Image (cartoon, rainbow, N blue to C red; front, side, top):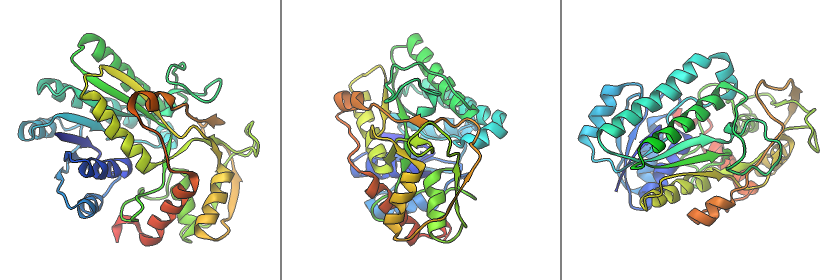
Amino acid sequence: MRILVTGGAGYIGSHTCLELLNDGYEVVVIDNLSNSSIEAIKRVEKLTGKNIKFYENDILDTEALLKIFDIENIDAVIHFAGLKAVGESCMMPLQYFKVNVTGTINLLEVMEKYKVKNLVFSSSATVYGDPATVPIKEDFPLSATNPYGRTKLMIEDILRDLYRADKGWNIAILRYFNPIGAHESGEIGEDPNGIPNNLVPYIAKVAMGELKEINVFGDNYDTADGTGIRDFIHVVDLAIGHIKAIERLMKNSGLVTYNLGTGRGYSVLEIIQNYEKACNKKLPYVVVDRRPGDIAVSYADSSKAYEELGWKAVRGIDEMCRDSYNWQYKNPKGYSE
């Protein structure tokens, strides 16, 4: 079976490619390398001893997509490609709508043309907005508190409408919570451009001495220590969730939606404390203003994924922080080395 992975050179994409190859799938990747590295693909090939067919193209380039579908015999698509920073989306919303929404429509039109109707979509817990209660279930009301979240919600709506119009599609919408960690080998991990937007890559840079201190965005939330609480999930557990979703699609699942999280929330200060154990040093931090669009508490009820996919997150916070630090320690400059 041949899977097209859009954004396959990125953080979650590269780990998913590795798990796909280990599971016997053939993998084709399209990635414009705007926030990723071809080195990730090379390392996945090295770790698995298998090849990936790679195309350096953008999903906004319809001609490039047509060429790939014309050449490759694609059976299903896992769609990661897109912009993903909450704060950045508030500053440049038009770019987020263009890349995320228009890019997805381009992809869906080409898939429809070639009668490839099996899709796993990389969504996000941001589609729940500011939930009234936790843990969050898939049937909770949907909303968004920032442009990034709105792009995910709009794409979900597009997919639901597409399925209502044509029941020949099999679509799995996977709502991620907060992926962290890295492959246990330390060969692939998260390598954002510039100063990281996400908490753990930022902590890693402080642990390596590249950044002076961790910015804690707000300590006046209604939580035990005043800092925001999130459901952090090991990226390898998340990648395996995509394999389970592909298996479900092959049984003509129709449209299905799953949370992928651990079901446990950790505060920002708890993450810092666990990372200190992983790197065996104290990490300085400073409290700054809240970021626009951030909410106080978010963690998942992932029981539906366990019941229907047989999937469950098995790696704990110690492994997440250990593997993150191992990646950063072995690759202090990320893939650029």
